[in-house]
Length: 193
Image (cartoon, rainbow, N blue to C red):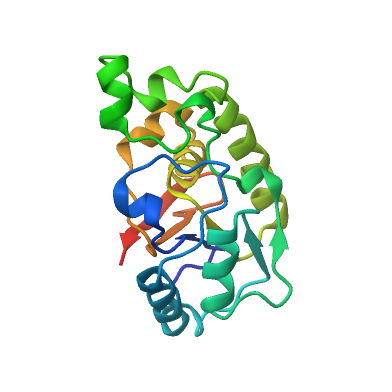
């Protein structure tokens, strides 16, 4: 079921060793696993029937590889604002390990020492939302989980911290759009694998 309004398709990158083990992967450039590559290839038939005016990707190797393997690297624009959350001191470690040293820590509430807070990620998401609204056309975006979750929250006008309420699996597809008019932003589909 389509929409008369432009849809924004979001793709979380395929599996990496760190996403598989639950290690926070912000700015580290971790490649896709063979399973991640296969899942990225399987995105192609799900996306190829769609027409996009632009394809945007995070600068990360995992997002760009997913974009390429899904068949959308030709003309894809790399946008720095689509980068994953900067986990700072928590880069490469798991939530369980963080909680052992900082009980009660929550990424979306507390942010990361020497990294970003939710408001920082929200500001980058707001830049992307502004570009999407100005483009007023269907766009395909490849990025990472926590950034895309904040992007969805900001698309809906929610605080960046509310990105905590959206879960994204690797190689999932989600769709942002509108309902009755261009002032009524909605999530049309979420975390389809």
